[in-house]
Structure formats: C-alpha cells, structure tokens
Picture 1 (cartoon, helix red, strand yellow):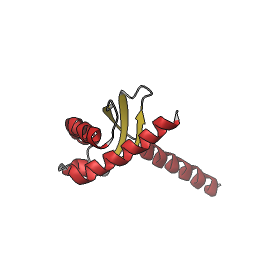
Picture 2 (picture 1 turned 30 degrees about the horizontal axis):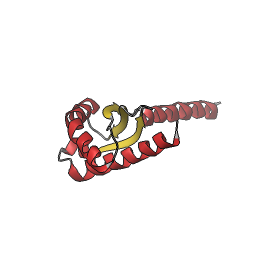
Picture 3 (picture 1 turned 60 degrees about the vertical axis):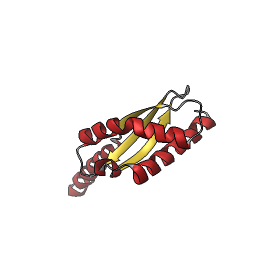
Picture 4 (picture 1 turned 135 degrees about the vertical axis):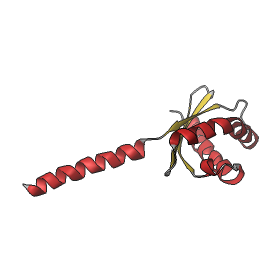
Length: 115
C-alpha cells in the first residue's frame, strides 16, 4: 500500500468520525465507532469499517447506507480530491472475533488448571 493511500485512509477515518459526531442527527449512527477505512488504489471505493454497541448492526448498517450520500458530499467539501470515493460500509467483527479467542484460551487454561 502506498504512503498516499495510507494517509488518505487515516484522513478519511478522521473526517468521517468528525462528520458523524457533529452533523449526523440519527442517534443510532452517532453511537457508531469507525475502526478503519480502506481506499482502493484507483480511489474509486472506500470501505468503512464500523462497530456499534448494543445495537442491531443490520439496522445501523441500513441507516449508514441511507446517510451515505450526505457523508460523501461532506467529505467532498472537506477533502480536496478530484474524485470522492464511493463509501461502502462494513461491520467490523474483529472485536467479537478477539473476544471469542480469549474465551477459548480461558477454557484451555481452566482445563490445564484442573489437571
């Protein structure tokens, strides 16, 4: 991955977080935590990874899809690029995956302590 793409990933993550915090009125979307942004090399698409606490992730994803146009237009205003990438929202299940691995490790340690 090039340095330019890496900087854009970080910039888009920061700007999207600011826009969601300051300008979105939907309370479900306000509770979203953005974890990463991955922009394609041709700058046509940006995958935006998110997590949400105690909410239905399908409902949150639907609300994000509905707000996609607004978010993209705000990004175009704040970041000066010839073309603003199309936003693709994807739930980040890495936290759940990590928690699952921790539970498995704890079970293994419990079995070892029993022996």
